[in-house]
Length: 548
Image 1 (cartoon, rainbow, N blue to C red):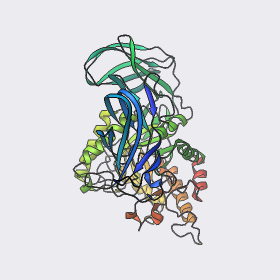
Image 2 (cartoon, helix red, strand yellow; image 1 turned 30 degrees about the horizontal axis):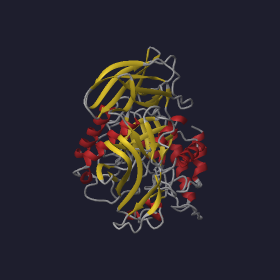
Image 3 (cartoon, helix red, strand yellow; image 1 turned 45 degrees about the vertical axis):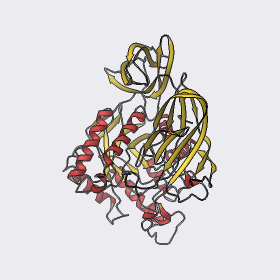
Image 4 (spheres, helix red, strand yellow; image 1 turned 30 degrees about the vertical axis):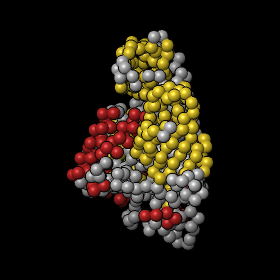
């Protein structure tokens, strides 16, 4: 399943999910059949494998095609009939390869994947989450004409109590320029038609769309509208694209964040794309089960730590009114790591791909970047400033933020629209949550973050599942329950805090490099374990969130 709704009526499209050949040895001596999407850490014998893997399948066709990869972890080289046609770095953003002039017949598609750490990789490095290997999200084969619609971006604005929707429609042309007609509209509403000349390369057409008395998107009534565009040449339809959006605005008024006229009060969790059975290749059924648990805990928000998430997960959040903080890919980097020769290009490319592909999701209320990186230094500030400027150039309709752990040393709090802090009182240091939170908030008011909304982006404590002991020692479920109770009460009772994201929803795998601080080679701060079995703290969170 590519999305939770149909994205085309005209463009021929088929998913290449299913059984592929997989091997790691040049001789193919270890060849086996595996399902795609998946990661090789879920294959017997490859649970700890780091290196190169090869995936191969076949497809039949003739003409021009577009191969869309929703996620390959973490580098992918694509070959069609033995010829290299594309490459990509980063596990967490969609990308595509256009292939023109295929001869009629059966064609072999091979994807060479690597999850090894090397000197070319600035983002996929040993970290406090696991870098899996494989084709971790769907693969789609599309039959295209000489020009196709790459994306539709919709901006909704309310003026004089009336909603307006403006569209930017990107068309990619693989051949020479030609005259065409572009139509666009919201389902069951008036269509707009424009005569255009399409140059070779990428063109963007802007237009206003009409909808009579649209229903606003809210967290309790998340109404979605379909927008469709079609491209015609000489009276024949060449291509189409369907996407979804909601009529809503995210705004900041003083130190509060609003969805239309609804003040946003975050009761959230941080969630890694990590599952004991599936690694980071989580199927939609398991995604929805996660959301059912979040809602059962009376949560209303997800932070996609620390990278863009699967589009299908965002679709599910759209449909259920879940607030989402989506984040570019970078976590805990020091100055030296941020000065890596490829850091700027790899990190900025991730931001561009994230925003281009996820622009229309009404669930996303903020874009985040650079979790716990060097925001205390002059060079770090330069990087933060550059990335916030990039985000605003791509999308100026949403506020920005980043999660900082640099209490009293951060020099970047003037740059985002929302100030977010990671704090762990009673876990990493013995200070009462209410006292520490008061000190943090008062310090923020002495910085460039004064007067801005404040979110506690991480808070929590660890518990090894099933470990119970008298006296509630650290790593016991009893200690986690006690700490979370005090932490959440302090944050949610603070009148000027917009909300909180618990670290974290579920226990997640980490690399062996962190074994000394992570029992089981897991980050054990989950409210549920890696199989989604609730810990004792689950009911505490459920009861406290119910009051807010």
